[in-house]
Structures are given as structure tokens and as C-alpha cells.
Image (cartoon, rainbow, N blue to C red; front, side, top):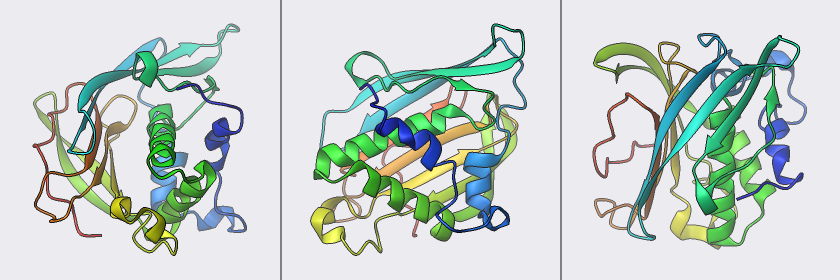
Length: 232
């Protein structure tokens, strides 16, 4: 899955505020996801590994992996970040980021997600980007959590969004409109990103979800099968 220059615009658009709101008006969720220095606890050269799982009744489940690599630039300064996000035909390719603060795996996860929403609905990439950005700015639920990482309990922050529940165009893809995203962050894990999770519930709600995707740092326990979605 190679990314055209137009699609690579995600790198900029998700890092900017919604048009017109001032720098001091970023939401807590925006700051945590796109502005905090999540890579501060890494020193190059460094590699962080993630496990990816897709399950659900709509399509064939699979497991894959992602790797974040942080390296010094050719002039010796810090740093260039690159990621190998999934493998083979599923691989997501984006430009290398120079001197990033946020962890690029967030952008990779969202870029793949936007491609998948376009594939399943025949909608427009930019429309799904806009819905996600609006949800992070206006509707995100943020709470403190305690996480398990390599056998230890560590503090974290959980950010939940449901971009399509109040979408005036949701009738065009009603089956997918309850999609929920949960981003779990922790400065106690390398690269600051503990897990990212999305779920499209089935009807009835206690049935196997249509699609469930989970990316989490190596060393974090796998989620329980078919967790019940949190209420938006």
C-alpha cells in the first residue's frame, strides 16, 4: 500500500489544528496524540517493535508486525524516524520524518485505517481524515489508566473517539458508523505509544465484531478476544 503525495498529506493535516482555531486552543487529545514529544525516551539508534492483529466476521483475520526505527541524520544530528508498518502487500509506505516528536506509528495506523474506510465504503480519503480530526479536537474522551508492560504496572492515558456516530452522511455507510478508536499512550514505554485499537461492532452488539484491529507495543499483553466497546 504505497502512499501518493496526496495521501501523504495526512502527515501534515493531522498535525495541524482544525482550520481557524488558535494554537492555544488545541484539545488535550490533540496535544497528547500529535504534539507531545513521545520519542523523548528514545536515544538513536533505537528500534521499537509492535504486534498487529486484525479479526472479526467481515473479513479474513491476520496477524502482522510494525517496527519504528530512530537514527541519527548523516550530519550526526538527531533524528530521522522511519517505520515498517505491516509487510508484503499490506505494507503502508510514507515519507521518512526528520526530527519528529510524535511517534510516526500513529500516522501509519491512521493512514491504513483511512485507506480501509475508503475501500469498504468507496468514500473519499479526505472526508475520513476530516471526521477523525474533528473527533480528536471536539469529541475525544481522555482518561488516565494503569497498564501492564513487561510484567510491570505503568501509568498511561487512554483517548477514545467515535468519528462517525454524529456524521450527517452516516447513512451512506451505516454498517460501519459505530466504529470506535482507542489510543493508549504512556511515557513509560519506548516511543510513548502503548496500543491503538479500532472496532466496528455487529448487530446485535454482543455478536462478534465486524472488524477489530489492534496494534500494541511488543511486551504488552494481547487484548481479550472481542472486548465490549466502551460507550461513546
